[in-house]
Length: 137
Image 1 (cartoon, rainbow, N blue to C red):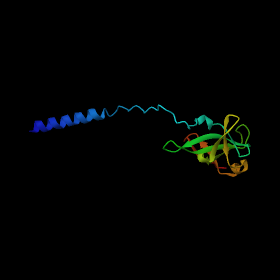
Image 2 (cartoon, one colour):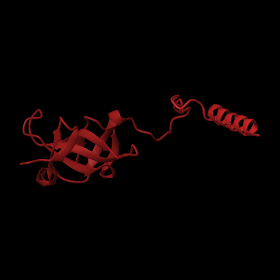
Image 3 (cartoon, rainbow, N blue to C red):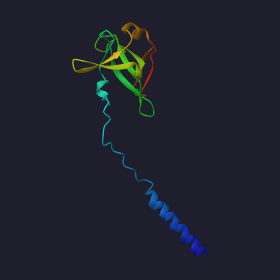
Image 4 (cartoon, rainbow, N blue to C red):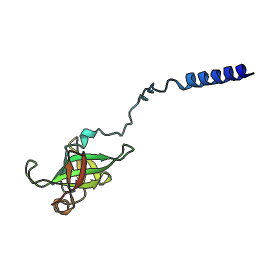
C-alpha cells in the first residue's frame, strides 16, 4: 500500500512538472503580427520641438516618463536657454500634447505659452538614481 501511494505521488509530481515545464525555462514573448494603425513611433515625440497653438516654438521634448504598466504618462519639456545651457525642464501630462500635421509633417502642440512653462516647477535628472527630481533652484 505504501509503495502504491509513493508511486502515485511520484507520478503526480512528474506529471505536474512536465505540464508546467522546467521552473527556469522562460516563456518566449508573444509576437505581434499586426501593428495598430493609429500607433505613433516614439521618435515622433522624443527630442522633438513643441509649439504653442500659434506655431511658436516653446520647448523641446527631453524625456518621456512611463508608468509601471508601460504607458507614457508624463513628458519632460525643456524650455528657455540656448543649446541646452540655461534650459529649464518642466513636466506636463502626456495627454496635453497634441500631434498636428502641416505640409505633410507631424509636429507637437501644447496649449500653453512659453512663459507659463518657464514659471512651472522645474525638474533635474539625477544620473546616479536615474530619476527626475524637483529642481533645487
